[in-house]
Length: 84
Image (cartoon, rainbow, N blue to C red; front, side, top):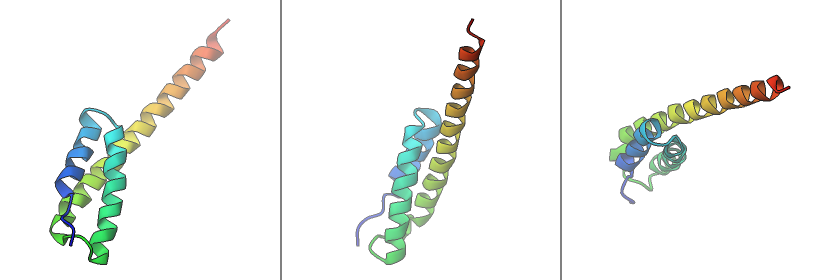
């Protein structure tokens, strides 16, 4: 069995909040991949909880990234519409 990457995924999920939201995307993708491997029995199941927590943090950080991007689009659109 391959060793789990739960700690790395959790760290990436937390970094998605603190440093750069793109770490959240990585945590989400890595978490999905690792959970699928854990379910199939190819990866150590001891890291399931850490992987789930990191994946959820990644999802939330990605949600914040999308929200920030929407706000930026609205603000820039308003600025362009207000130009004489």
